[in-house]
Length: 209
Length: 86
Image (tube, rainbow over all chains, first blue to last red):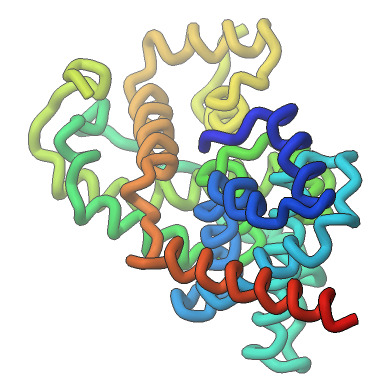
């Protein structure tokens, strides 16, 4: 994810707060995708995610004065998006359902990768296949909540461990554990798919991108 | 030290993030040199990450950005009205 230069960003924020409101459009543009993906990682419904993304951006606009610059703007915005998502989730699931924050870390389960024996690398062609993208989307959506959220922030939005921990309100150690498990679960889910759709053997770095 | 496969799997994620220490990195790489299974697991996991970060994999709804900025523009207009009304 490309992010705005932070000095530039601080300047933009100062000008918006000084009254140049229209500049908020420019401030938010590099993060639109991130806000939507954060929402979809929580609510898992496109319409709900888009509504939530709009609400999160409006909320960031209204509360921009409370952004003090201690955290990065992207982290601050992500926290707003996460809160919006959780609020929506509570509404849909009802109060009886345990909240995401209270979910227990799953210690049960097999987080070892799927061993591969008949091929050594995924061919470039396979990565270009639409079906593989679709399979990955489904697999990510179906990850348990606590793993999906860490995976989306870290690997989809390319935030670092610290930022991910801060945004989710968990410690960096938990981020690492959940990330590892999420990746292993995805690897396991996608390997059978790759085996059947990847008959051509070629090194991933063997071809031009 | 000669690592076994299971030990390598436990560190795949950190290895891919470049956050294992130099000694462990060296041990893992030594293991990978002669273990096709672990190499394949590492490659497939890496490729999943590449695919995840690819903008085409997780797309946005068509018109998302336009609708977002329209909504924002309305919000700005309304807040303008509110502040002049006060």
